[in-house]
Length: 69
Image (cartoon, rainbow, N blue to C red; front, side):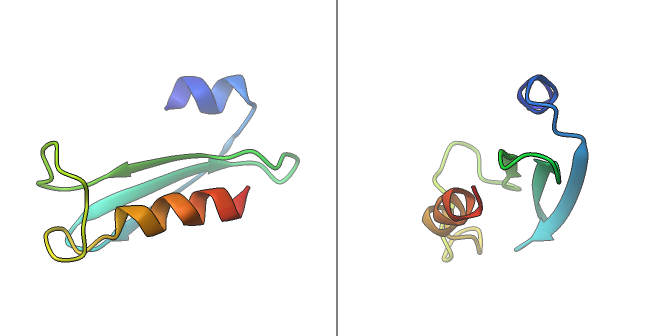
């Protein structure tokens, strides 16, 4: 993720703790519209994050990402 953020000149990093200890990291810049997001879902293994299992709606996170750009 650092590669993509660096290659696009994104220097501002924020980390949010979301549902059940998962982390959403966002790389942004006030000078650019682009963003890089990384969602690390705790104890997810290779399953799609859902409200029932992880407390996170993976579909909503993706839509939020596209709405933010």
